[in-house]
Length: 60
Image (tube, rainbow, N blue to C red; front, side):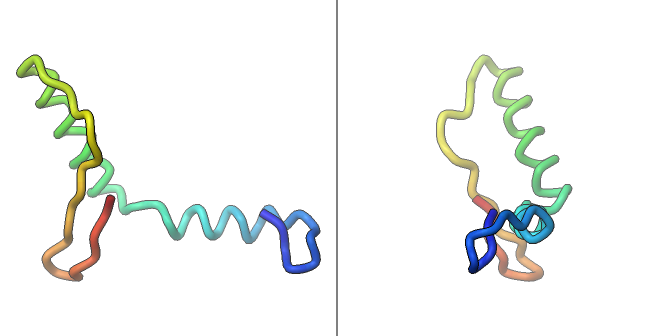
């Protein structure tokens, strides 16, 4: 990540990556869905798309 002058700005890059990452409960749900699919002899081949009904935010 570089700033507007073109110099490296790792602090801003780290902050943006952290803000874009889905919450832990979303990551856990996706991991569990993949495990359950595997138990049934299946695999997830596309994106899992979730929506939080409380906030309305969508996670892809």
